[in-house]
Length: 234
Ligand code: SF4
Image (cartoon, rainbow, N blue to C red; front, side):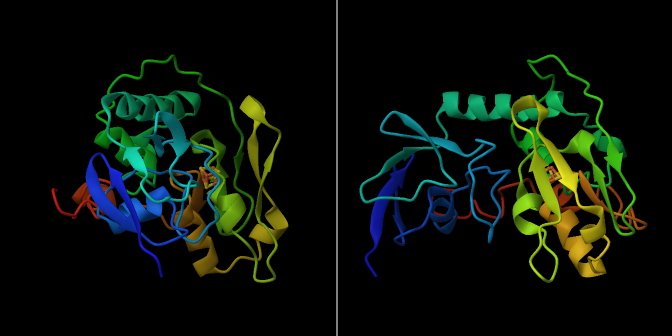
């Protein structure tokens, strides 16, 4: 298999043919933040948090394959500020009250807020009114926290392959719908996986909550990305 050579922020890296920039960066111990991307799901490049710059052009690193000789900018100050502004937009566009959320400490958006030292967003809060769906026996959908990453649409299916979640409408009206009949067929393990797949606290497993206290959860121990940033020069 031919090895591909490329650089990220001046650091020499190698990739396997077909690897995306996000995958290759990870394999080289370099963290590129993602929200809509999830290992095993087809990348869609919808959140744009992973945007990098290649030869002056902006690209979604989760969908763009690495090519020979690519020179990638990942941590230029303007790129990092753009990512921070996207994180701020996610916070103001929904209703996120971290201290009261079951996903606090396991939430990727919250963890990115900490990583990018978000304090007061530069945009006004929109305070949208969104409906909660809590009828299925095992799951609830708290749309106030949804960031429309579409992980659930791509990854939560019944045993016979039917999609439990769907995205309806477009633009600012986009909404995630949960098929309640299909959701009712999910097993305990499948419901738990759906909750884990959601990067925020929008999909929650019902009946059990706060089994692990806030302060003892994944990102309470180590910042997001620290599991990847182990390569040379770190
Ligand atoms: S419910 Fe969760 S996984 Fe689904 S689109 Fe919203 S944030 Fe993403």
